Image (tube, one colour):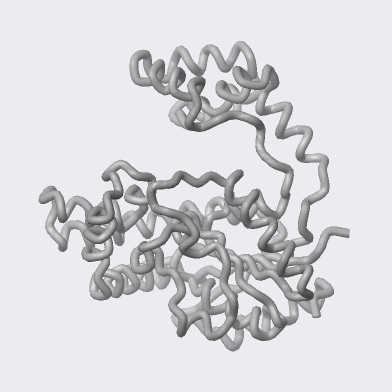
Length: 314
């Protein structure tokens, strides 16, 4: 049987970090971050990475493990997080995955690997050049010839996945559709118990997000961006495209005021939270805890404990 783990998920600013720590303390567990930006060093403020006080003595993994100049994908995260999770299990501890990057969590829980293809390789470069020169139309037409199921499924504006589907076919001779169908039938690597956090009223979520962004600015987000640039991080690095960093980069470049950047970060963060919820709601296994005006962590811990007990976690 697949070993049990706990996944605490939800949109940004919903309290995942705090509940993850409470559950880890309750069950003698350790937290594994599943946040696509918290993996980078020197990006504590803008990613809301947990402080030592917030960790409260609970070991945390997959935080600040990579140089911001590096590129990460769900496949790489799954490869590097799985041995960490397995080590926690081998020591008799409970792994608690905490994060809002749904694709990454799905990847590590399923553990099936990804279709071959190199994002930085020559095939991808050729496809990107064609996209820039010809637009997405001819590429979608080519995909329709070799993988009609993917062409039908993908929106014409989803250029990233259209390129990915073509890349897989060119490099492997097999369609990404075939790969996905094969992996669907495989059992997951881990038996995950899913706990999701969200607000009953979306307006309450928006207000909390806005307050968090204000605190980030007060804590020195602009200086954090300046420090990253001072270390030689190129302006087009993936890490600097993260919400908060991209907008405050504009302040340093003189294209936006701090007030404009702050307003943009709040807007982008609210939009991101909506996308996170859209992704997570597709997972029927998630047990949702709904916040009212305030986040009641004692109640959330009690509900989560009942869910875990029913799932055989002790």
